[in-house]
Length: 233
Image 1 (cartoon, rainbow, N blue to C red):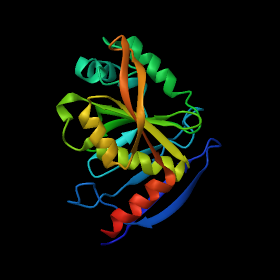
Image 2: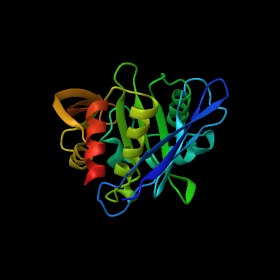
Image 3: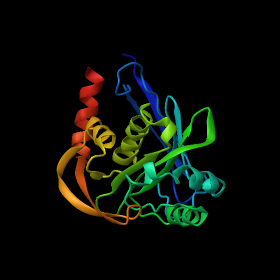
Image 4: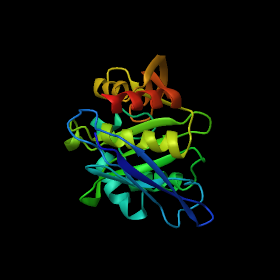
């Protein structure tokens, strides 16, 4: 299998950039075709974005949330079938909520990143959001517009974001969770290599009550081992 050369362009707060070259083999989880990942720095990033990058995969472009996305964001996520499986997102969801979320992305802790998921051929079309946020142990979260469910988009996006978290941001452990009964999300997390670590209770703003969640974690060591194993198959 031919090795893909991945160029990581890391945007520094001082306005400079450095290039890190990593040669390794990658493939999508379904094994049907190789996945090429390209990382580009966000220019003139506001303080708080740290080393967040624009990432392109086979089908997707993951980029920063922009002020021009807010109407699309509010219209896309304002769907009870999406928000019922999230904990920190209200429903109904309006433009004011989108504005608050945008302002939140401008003041992220260092070990955090928020990406808008878009179609690579049309980066203005918002498909969803994926992020990892937190100070000590960041938590991976994601959502996707309903018409695109079941197409492997979150898995493709998440594999790229995990690489960014563990290689670029140098996170040592990522947490995640899904509301009990959300089987598609549980399968995604298990497929990414996350281990179940217990059951908990979390408040869902959209539902207006506490819900039972299944909690997961993935360490940098586990992720690296899984990645090496996959490239050898």
